[in-house]
Amino acid sequence: MAVLIYKSLPSTNTEAKKAGYRHGDAIIAREQTAGRGQRGNSWSSRAGENLTFSLVWEPTFLEARRQFLLSEAVALALADTLAKYDIRSKIKWTNDIYVGNKKICGILIEHDLGTDGKLARTIVGIGLNINQKEFEEWVPNPTSMALEGGRSFDLNDVFQTLYDALESRYGQLQTAPEELEREYDALLYRKDSEHKYRLPSGNVVHGIIRGVKSTGELLVESEGMVVPYLFKEIEFII
Image (tube, rainbow, N blue to C red; front, side, top):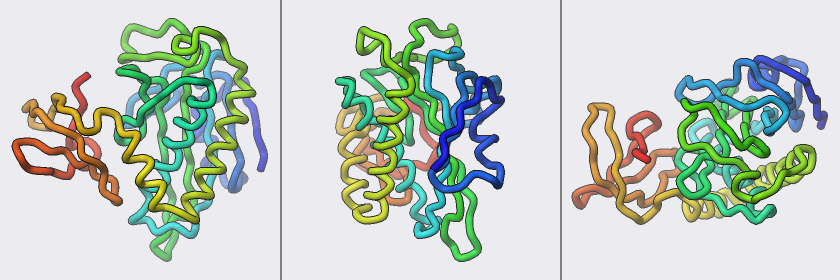
């Protein structure tokens, strides 16, 4: 494992895709000038105040159809880390981390597939808000460890805690994936309570999250029916 720290990078995920990086390597940027989030969004992070990094994994044992397990492992590792600093969090499907109704962390996972139907390489991009207390107006419902914990945190200490948690959850992915799924399901944001959601048509529905399928679809009960939704097929209204 190698940990490389850069003063500035356009995107740690883009850097991590270079062939020279191997399993377990982490690329940290104190500043990202073109950070990327899910749905093609940009990721905003004030230089030197937060943790923005990418981790290289080579999960060649995992079938591509079960790739959502990696999202579950990463999300749980972040929840584990925050809990060690007395910050209780939930996982907003697919893999945002929320404290209350505010987003403290975003995750961008990108895969390369092998020719055998399994994953060859995975880049795990993480943006965890740590010491930032003020955010741009366009950033939706943000929070940080400093805002939630009432103090500042050492970035290196948080990184090491998180890296260890990621390693532990990766091991669980190999040995006990069913338990990983159960723990992810138990930490789902808004599970078993009714809220509003928006569909691609623009229609708003009232639904109750009941869980997540092993293939990653969100299970939402509405009008007596449980419907599975893929990524981008349903939007949280917060």
